[in-house]
Length: 281
Image 1 (spheres, rainbow, N blue to C red):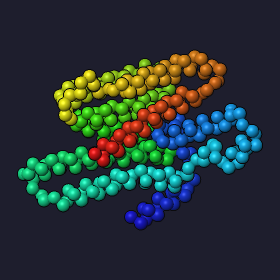
Image 2: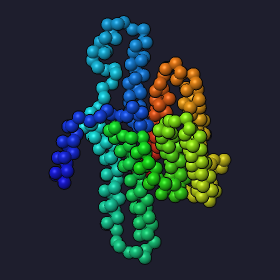
Image 3: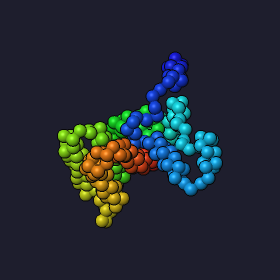
Image 4: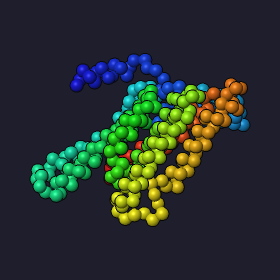
C-alpha cells in the first residue's frame, strides 16, 4: 500500500497534459474555464481605466490560474469524503445487527445496504468525472451504468438516471463530427432517450412506485422539458446554423463545443448533487 501511495505521489509531480481536452468534458472544470474566459472577455470590454486593468492582470486574478494535478486530486478526495464517511456508518450498522436471515427486518436492511452500495458507486464515479484531471467525456458512462440498476426503484432514481443520460450522452455527440454521421447519432440518441422515458414511465410511474401517484406529473418535469428544448436548439445551431453561417468564414470555430460542454456541465452538476442527496437519504 505504501509503495502504491509513493508511486501516486511521484506521478502527481510529473508533467501532465492540460487540465481538460481541447473539447472540454462536461464537468466542474469546464464551468471553471468558461467562467475564466468570460471574466477575461468582460475585463477587456469593461469601461475601466487601463491602470486598474493592468493591476488586475498583474495579480493574476483574471484569467484564473489552472489547477495542477495535485490540487485536482485533493479536490477529488474532498468530494469523496461524504461517501467514505457514510459508507463507514452503513457498514458499521450492518455489522452490529444480529445475523438472522429469516427475519424480515434483516432482509430489508440487506436490500437497503445493497441499494446504498450502488448509490455510493454511482456517486464515486460521478465525483471522479466531475472533479478528475484531464477527464474524457466518455467517462460519464461509469456513472450511467450503475445508475441504471437503480432507475426502476423509485421516481427520484428514475429522474436522476434520465437526466444523467440526457446530459451525459448529449455531451458525447460532438465526438461523431462527420457529416455522414449526423443522422446516425441523432437517431441513436433520440431512440435511446425515447426508450428510457417510455419504459420508466410505464414501470415506475404508472405502477405507483414510491408512494401515491403524482397528479399531472410524469417522469419529465417542466424543467426537464425546458432542458430538452434547449438541447434541441443547441443541436440545431451546432449541426446546421454554425456550419452554414460561421464555419465558411472561419469564425467561432470552437463555440459549438464550448456551448455543449458548458450546458451539459450545468445539467450534470445538478445530477451530481442529486446523486449525493439520494445516497445520503
